View (cartoon, rainbow, N blue to C red):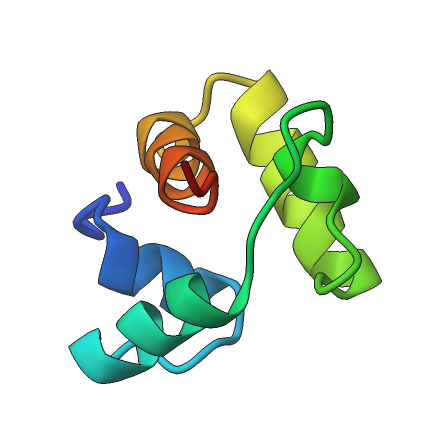
Length: 77
């Protein structure tokens, strides 16, 4: 049984990104998504990151709520 906490820092860890609070804030500040673009279509993801995002979200996996939260954070007003 996987006991990983499903939160933003652990999602970043799963994606192979730095997961300290400052690094997450910098990532969100430096990246954004246009209204019509799906999260996994963003050009800043590697192929394996895209695959993880698609599979985890589509399978309603443990990460889907956190992935949706990241999607919201990357959409600038």
